[in-house]
Image (cartoon, one colour):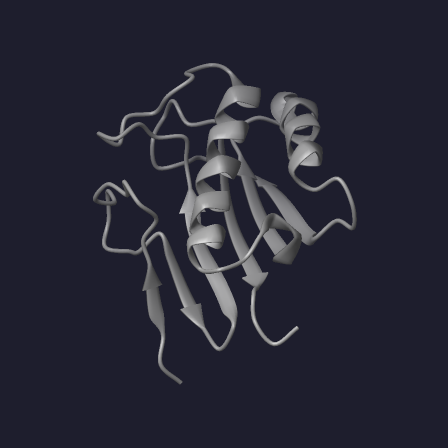
Length: 129
């Protein structure tokens, strides 16, 4: 099964050897996403809500570039550095998934950049509806 690399317009070079997204057989796999600027610096330091919004906007751009919408998201992997940010992250998250909610899990852990508070990886089914 062939795969297509998904690169939204304006995508910067990732900080590691990965693609922002891949599309295979109608399924989009979005890499773990952090709140980065164009130079891969963490933005909105100390603000879990703003970082979550940035992360979800980036995920949205990958899914839309692949031909889907956020309604096509079926699963999210959420990583946060502190449970104290859980409510703030969920509040923003709920704005992006107002209807039927995708399956997900949430884990507290360290992230690749110390100022990052949240990372989300996503799976969306954009084909074969």
